[in-house]
Amino acid sequence: MYGLVIIRYRLCAEKVEEVRGEHRAYLRGLKEKGTLVASGPMDPMSGGVLLVRVPDDNVQAALTALRDGDPFYQKHVASYEVVAWNVVIGQEGLDKL
Image (cartoon, rainbow, N blue to C red; front, top):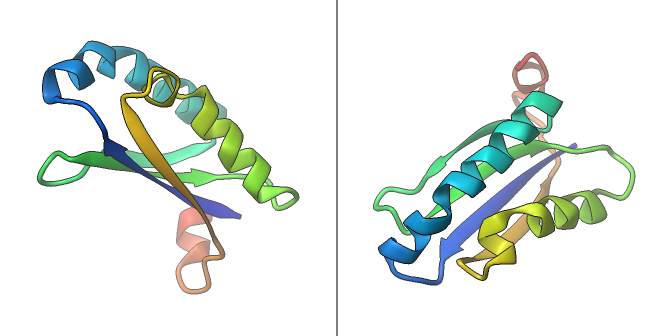
């Protein structure tokens, strides 16, 4: 199963920048584990989006745990929307990533 994590900044750019290094280190760890497929900021930079791969059982718990582990969430820098995504068209391409 896949999920989308939509991140929206709650604080000014300077405060976001103070935590960005920790956030990106967290994302690199998720990428190394095979959980994070892709990530990047929105344009204009008001937040970001993560495409993640999670186990099919208890998807919401896995997505919530991803959110809870992110320094942006822990330090109240951003709000999060986590969405389970059942890919119908193109899943075979995502599975190769």
